[in-house]
Amino acid sequence: MIESSAPTCAEQVCTVCGASGVRIWRPAQSWPDRLLCFTCACADQHKDIVEMAAEKSDQIGWLVPAVPDGEGSWWGYTSVPQAGVDAWHALPLASPASQEPKP
Ligand SMILES: [Zn+2]
Image (cartoon, rainbow, N blue to C red; front, side, top):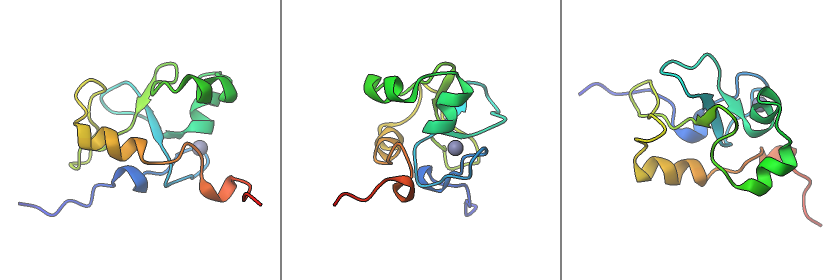
């Protein structure tokens, strides 16, 4: 068995702003040309960030959660195993560094 260096959910990086450690979306195609954090995904799909956050949907327009399959690709939206769903949902929507610390 070959050791895989494929990134985990938390290691994925937004190709627009470089954010990592956050939920990442991808276009729903077999080989996505970009990976997007919540903020960039909303901008990409012309969605309102506040509305999308309130909706609690895991799809943003044509973008779906990017859940790595551990082999250099991603699970199809309807075939993500529960562990992958859990790992993806465990990540914050936005980078903790960009959030105001609570007093
Ligand atoms: Zn981003």
